[in-house]
Structures are given as C-alpha cells and as structure tokens.
Amino acid sequence: MIKVEFAAGDTRWAVYETPLKQAFAKLNLDVDLQTRHAPQDVDYIVYAPGSDLQDFTPYTNAKAVLNLWAGVERIIGNETLTMPLCRMVDPGLTTAMVEWVCGHTLRYHLEIDKCLNTQNRWDPYVPPLAKDRPVTILGLGELGQACASALTGLGFPVTGWSRSKREVPGVTCHHGDQGMHDALANAQIVVLLLPDTPATQNLLNEQSLSNLPKGARILNPGRGPLIDDDALLAALDTGQIGHATLDVFRVEPLPLGHPYWTHPNVTVTPHIAAETRPSTAAEIIAENVRRGEAGLEFIYQVDRDRGY
Ligand code: NDP
Ligand code: OXD
Image (cartoon, rainbow, N blue to C red):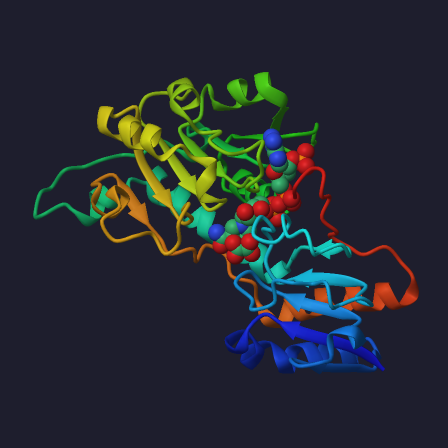
C-alpha cells in the first residue's frame, strides 16, 4: 500500500481528504492517506506553506513532496527537503486567475470606478475599445499564458515577458532584460505573474516604473516582493502610476497601518486571486503519485536552480 502523508494542515484536511481519496481511487491507486504516518514509512507528502512539517529529515523514504500551492518560495529554501518537489498547476486555480485578471483589467479598461462614483452627475465617458488598450503580462508560464490568451480573446493587444523565449499565439513575446524594457514601453495595464525568486525581486522599481506610460495601472497577483513598495508608493503619489490592485504582499496579512490600506489609488485584495481547488488539484496530486509508482517523471517538478 502506498503511504501518503497529508501535511497541509487540519483546515485543508477537512476539504481535501475526500477529493484525494476519490482521485486515488480513480487511478486505481491503493493509497493509505493519513495525517500521522510514521515518517520513515511515508512515500509521498502533500504539503502547503505554513505546515507544521518543517524538518523533512525523518522522511527517509519519501519519493516526492507535492505542494498544493503554485508558488514555492516558502519551501524551496528548506535544506532538509532533498527529495523532488512538485508545485501545483491546477486547472481550477488557473481558471480563477484568468477570471481575477480579466475582471480587474476590465475594471480599469472600462473605468468602472468612475461609474460607481457618479454622485448624481450626468458625465458621459466613452472608454476606448480593448484593441486600443495595451496590456503587458510579466511572466508567461501556466498562469501568464492563460491570462494572455483570455485577454487576447477580449480584444486587448497583449505583450508578454518571460525569462526564456516563449511563443504564445496572438501575443507579442519578449524575454531578457531589454525585453522587459520593450514589454513595458506601451503598457497601460501591467499584470505581474512571476514567481518570487532572487532574480525577480523588486523588478518593478523606480526605473522600471518610469519606463511605463504615465498613468499606467498595475495588477499584482504574483508575489509581493516583485514590487519595490516605496517606489510604487512614490510613483502613485506623482501619478506616474494611476492605480494598483495588489493581491500579494511581502508580509501577509498586510499589516494594519501599511500605506497600501489607505492609499486612494490602491486596491488591496487578501491573496485570493486564485485558490487551489480541491477537486481538480487532487487529480494532479494523484497523477504524480501514479507517475512516481510507475517510475515516470513527475509533472510540474520544481527546478531548484531556477527557483521555480
Ligand atoms: P510558472 O512557473 O508556470 O511561470 C512563471 C513565469 O515567470 C515563466 O514564464 C517564467 O519564465 C517567468 N520568469 C521566472 N523568472 C523570471 C525572470 N527572472 N525573468 C523573466 N521571467 C521570469 O508559474 P505560474 O504561472 O504557475 O505562477 C506564477 C506565480 O503566480 C506563482 O509563482 C505564484 O507566485 C503566483 N500565484 C499567485 C496566486 C494568487 O492567488 N495570488 C495563485 C497562484 C500563483 P520562463 O517561461 O522562461 O520559465
Ligand atoms: C499559490 C498561491 O501559489 O495561492 O498557489 O499563491
């Protein structure tokens, strides 16, 4: 029997136990799924940041750690984790991110805030069509590509930027340092969908913010450290950046008293852009257990050198 340890916390256990058992059964995997196996017996560990499990040393026979989150910055530096680490690529999470990004892009594009604050004024405002509103997505991975395709489908001219060269139908793709400069040059709305790695921290800084057209808007559902917060606040104050919608922060929950809470041109959402969905994520976990047992390569294995 395959022993799978669920080490993602009690709250998640309550919602993941049944979908995981169903997903294992669907693949005919004979799994003993528990929260308290003896560590040396464990074959796979289902994990989430914030878990009580921080020392992987006793899990001497574990074949993989299967993360329920897409981002791995809170686990990748754990030196006791020597077995393969797989991140989450969940169709439910991807759909949620596409909805969040499209929704907030349309809020900016249609100037929905103006409509909500008319205060009895008849003040006709005609937004441009989407085809005249360039959007740039920094990060063209699973989520960036899905969002780029959806925004292209809505008619926005989409530009994307990644570390390596990418091709996404209908999207102008750039990569590398000069590529970022080019990707930002015309962007009226910028979406950050990069992982938090040493190479991506503070990518949006005084200089890159000044590359944007005046009044550009920022959506950050990626990670807080991608942005130099002081530089963004300064750019919001001068109007270089028109508005920012931020879902992720260096410290979460965002501390009370942080200037983002009260800045008139910032919207804070509490890291809800895209939750992992148990029913679809369970199938990804089960597929990786199946692969591990069949001696196949895991899907979505993290490359520790790249950091994502
Ligand atoms: P992927 O690993 O699939 O894609 C990451 C993208 O970022 C790739 O295109 C990659 O380039 C690019 N990238 C990485 N490093 C650099 C760099 N130094 N310079 C330029 N481009 C770089 O990740 P996902 O799309 O699945 O997820 C992205 C992030 O979204 C997650 O890491 C997480 O932080 C965040 N997230 C947030 C959620 C929320 O609710 N707010 C939910 C889920 C995820 P390349 O294509 O060349 O590899
Ligand atoms: C994730 C997240 O990385 O929720 O999955 O941010």
